Amino acid sequence: MKHKTMKSMVRRMAALAMAAVCTFSLTQVNTVKAAEKLEVGDYVVPITSLKSKAPIAAVNEAFNKAFGESAKVTVDGEGNMTATVENNHMVINMMGEYHANVLTVEGAEYLSYKTEQSSTTFGNPAAIANIEVPEKMQFPITPSDDGVCELKITVDFMNNLMGGGNPYPTVVTLTLDFANAQVDTSALSDLLKSYEDLVKEDYTEDSWSAFEAKMKEAEGLLVNGGASAAEVNEMIASLKDLKGKLQLVSDLPEADYSKVDAAIASVPKDLTKYTDGTVKALQNALQTVVRGLKQNEQNKVDQMAADIEVAVKGLKEKTTSDNNNTNNNSGNNNNNTNNNTNNNTNDNTSNNTSQNTGSTTLDKDNLKDGIYEVPVWLWHATKDQASMAAQSLNSTARIVVKNGVKTMYIYTKSMTYGNIEASLQELKVADANGNYTSATVEEKNASGNPTCFSFVLPHTQEYLNVKVNPHVAIMGHQDIEARLRIDYSALKLVSEDANDTTVKVTTPASGSSYGASSAPKTGDYDNYAAIPVVMLIAAAAGVMTMVYRKRQAK
Image (cartoon, rainbow, N blue to C red; front, top):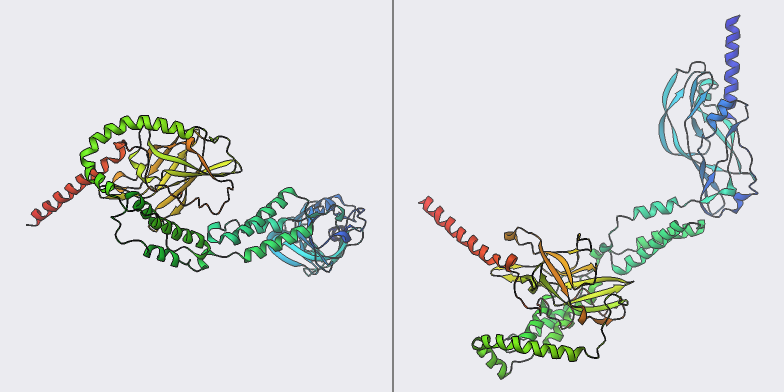
């Protein structure tokens, strides 16, 4: 008798528990048909609460967050709605811990799965099995005016106890708080993240500019918030469209070099009859030619041709006095040295005075946006004299001021020491705290050597601490400390437009002595003069080694 009574009690408790598990009712909220106000798009909609009709606290507590705190609701063009929820594992504390999971929702698409514990026998909490259950589900909903949705579901606990191991579907209610729905921007955020690995340099400037501008607009929309679903959807569509229109530089045809070739063909075969300065200017123009540029850089190629044409037209033949001066230079060097020393001091003083009188001096610390030119030299790190590497630096640099930020562009070329030819491969600039940052390589020649570096000016003092590295193997590829001397007194405005495309900031200034320095080459032999010596030592060692090997062979 006692056995039958206990069995009957178990059955009654099981039936009561199944009713609690499978019957959900949510507290109504006054949404006033808020769902009808939602336009096409994705929304995050709060789930107010989940309560069982059965007055069992343990069941209410377990099922309170079965679908999480919110659902993602998607509204299509016809007004149809789908809800996406996270399926949470439930533990029912009722004379022991029982594990339960929602297994199915009618009409649902199961986006992912997970493994969870499942109780198989009521009255025996220890009877547990690991089963695969949905992790994320998406299903259609038709909410009432109060946001109540009816769902037909199955729960593993009920299937085991009431269905004999077979599905035992039941109808539950889910209430959504549409009055507090928020536009879901996660799709836009995910799209932006997927574009983070794109490299600007791989695409044409025009196609990338439009795409980049739209990405910044999208980032602003996310940061500012308050965007409507329509705005988010439009932004996603625009981004995808511009992404599809990105044009790879590698797919472009090569630029037309016919004007360059014609300009080179116009160069006189015999340049000995022209002055050294005009010949040097022509050689500099020829050295700036870079082959292999794509069609999107046709303007650079055309500028190369134009520079050569100007240099050819600028060739000046030597006069008789020039020839005599050439012949007499060796005999007059000593006299010239003394005369120049005495005369230059007085002449320069008077000339500078007269030239600067009445001229407008630019305030280096308060420059308006635009493009400027300024004389520069590579100076010894500690001594008041030019570096031997000064010959690698163009004497004219440019400063581009944009939104108050000063960016300097300097230009370099190869330098020769004995049989060694090298170019500056690295340039590091010190900030106000003495920390060095590598300058950006803006341009390279056909040999792959840098011809233009850029960096943000850390200050406007006359001397700027730098480190240069020509990557000469015999010197161990070491950084060499130096100073960049900047003559701000000769600063001049080139263009009031910082984006002026007629001024090629990556190309040396027209008329400047590319690769030369007007500063006196008075030393810095500490680092560079040793190169020819080391070369000689190395050559001697090589000869001695060859002789030794020959003797050994005999």
